[in-house]
Image (tube, rainbow, N blue to C red; front, side, top):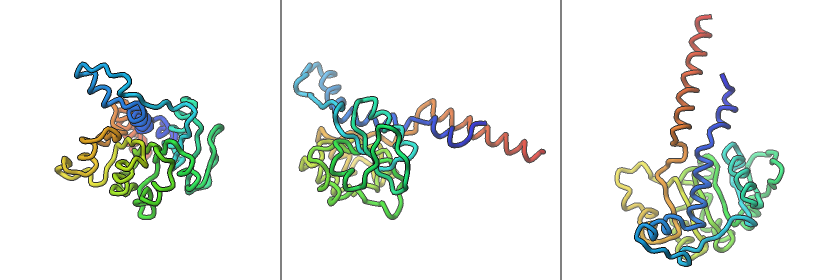
Length: 224
């Protein structure tokens, strides 16, 4: 049976979605797709940005943060990261403090667990320190971001765009009136997916197989 750490490293679905949200945001893919479906071949109207040469900032340099860092390097980005722990970065990744991360990132990708200490850590003060027009990606938890400040930053242009897989209160019965969803229906700088980061055929099959393997191992040890 594979060690748990090795197993977790093989589950890349959430990191891949983070990159998909980033590409969808900077290349304006949802809106370009809508135009194409309507027969409007408006190339210049959906001009986006390339990632090569930009700075990717990663908040939380754990398993997923490290995977996303490798994607950033493959896209020829400068990669910086910040973590509350003292961790060793891979080649091509620079560890920085939180303020430097905010100040220098063209793209800020969040990969931290929600705690009471970091609830709302991305807030009005945070946005004010970020580069004008930066892009935010969140596949962690919605409550890490102060959503009122988030909307203000999108509306003002402080944020150039955002891609999120999570929102606060996402398990509420009626989300049609959620402020972020209402905003996304009216503006072309916010991409939202319904918390599908870890939901792929491959990742779920691997989790089931790993769980069964651990159960079999436990039962065999109990019979020994």
